[in-house]
Figure 1 (cartoon, rainbow, N blue to C red):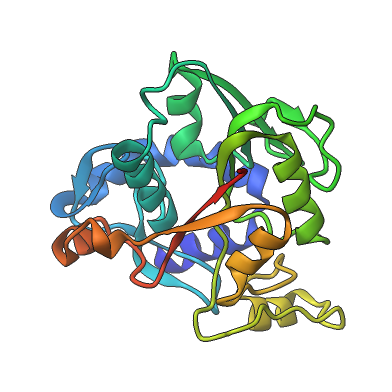
Figure 2: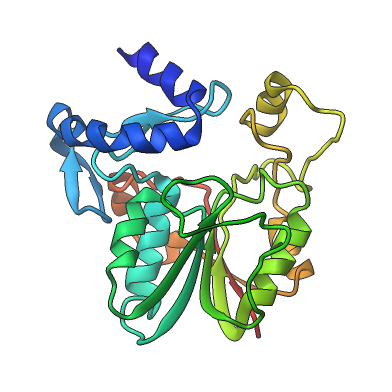
Length: 257
């Protein structure tokens, strides 16, 4: 069963995985009933989480079986709920690129949000467009989310500039990426073309770069002012372990001053 799960996770196209996840998450929580780990998004506890990731970057005990959050989603949720005005400020205009299922319905029903989702292919997105050229006016949004996208696009700097353009002055964005903290400089090589080599060097078959410690510099080059949110400053190791947050992950808040 575990081998089948891993095979489907890494072989099926993303739109099909999204559709299959709805019936799956209705039975998975029953199989993982317990209280060893917890998800702050769905507020449920489990014996353990599911595994997730490619063969190169596979991780155990990280995927919530109910709302399908990963470490990055749970960290972002904690920031939004406890360290921002995202849930309380009225008339927030939000652009959510590649909307995650665990957030989509929740944000969609928030009365304080004017919420727009977009993606190249996702079946749950309101709009479909190429991030290199966003067909929206400048200075339009208070908040932008665009997580685990910049490792896929041809020109990450151009996409970041486009998101900066549509963000209002005073607005902020969260753009999480896979980040290798053992690398000082982001690695990308146009000669790496095969899915097998991309997985080997970039951790996933559809990635075209692996960001290093210099990721904040990419955001700054696009115009953003970057703040680091360090979970260790606010949460105990016990909470970090219970929510199964990634030990090394830093949440970057990119602001348009």
